[in-house]
Image (cartoon, rainbow, N blue to C red; front, side):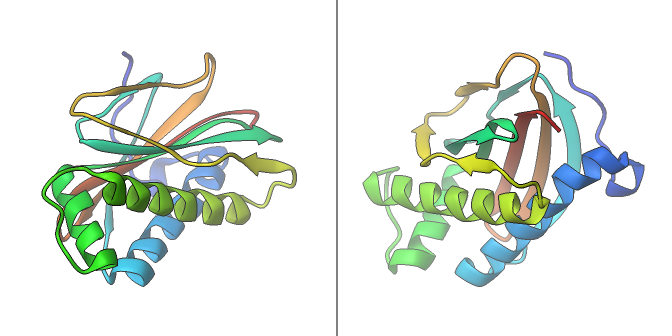
Amino acid sequence: MVVQPLLSIVELSEKRKRLILPFVECTKNVFSMMLNWETELIGIFSTEKFMSKYDCSGLIGVSGALRGTIVVSVDQDVAFAAAEAFLGNKPATIDEEVVDMVGELTNMIAGAGKDRIGIPGILLGLPTVISGRGHSVWFDHGAHVEILQFSSPHGPLTVEIGVRGL
């Protein structure tokens, strides 16, 4: 796996900013509005393959003008705290309600990010959620993958954007 160094937004090319900035803004907005959590972007890096350090990932396929996958990956503590904020009770395991909540967060971030990119003809699929520590997500061959690392009051999370066509 080739990982390019951690970057700040200032160091990014205009092309990368066009892809990344909408998802930074949308991630912060979704967590703020839906959970009343402040998230902070703590790093950006590029890779060819994503291997999650976390327990639960929501995936949405992208087609049309861009092709690829958007992934929102959270640690179990983040998933449980978010489920508690949504549902009022803290789950003991990654169950159907936690999976639904991760899928909904993924859907909100991906949908808002797609709209903010401003490229007509981008289509999104329905979210799919996978769980299990250390799971791997393989992006389309030739996809450019940006990984946005965030901190939250309940732990870290990432938003990975792996697309072709930009």
